[in-house]
Image (tube, rainbow, N blue to C red; front, top):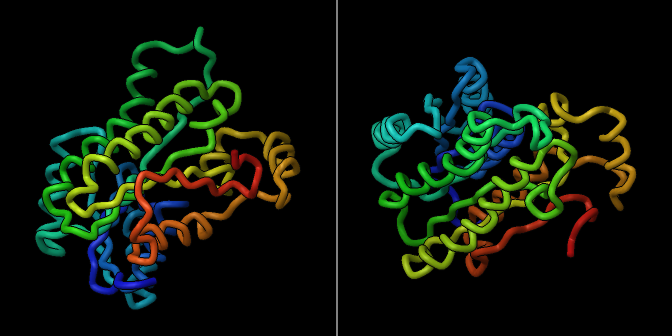
Length: 251
């Protein structure tokens, strides 16, 4: 992809699955990657090791990206490691935590879902914006659930990802005059620990069978799209929510 070598990226939730794959792909393209982790330092450092073993440059940095103080500290670490510019931001952090009907949801669970899936996007984007030069790219990881309402017990997850979808369009309008593009990847069922934890094998087989390509997606395929959106190859794309779901929902 055009003009990625030497750029700096921050990827939130980069310790595994989609975030890890995106970080590795960016590094292979010559990008210096700040690998954000929260719960598991060893997993964040493992992502960095994979990158370095392939000749790339990366640093792991802790932050709870739902906490503004942690986000500020993460930005300070980014400046210390890679200077005062961040050219690429991937807002990947997200979670379902549990499948619950609305009758089972309390305010604490509501706050958890909305904070992790949407507040994190707001806080990190706000903190990064002053460091992002013209030509910068912000990529938000949304979900097919934002469009179809998701599976049983995922109403708040779907709503929070719907907020990411709308926010992507709004920020594209706001940041466009500064030459910064904002897009979202609207991912369908992808083979990650998310579905290992929250989706039964029976449902996964059913969904895969209903997909024109008859399979789940792979994290590496999400990463390929992220690389395209990060690069100047997509320089006239902004405000887009791009489906990647094997053809199961494209309308």
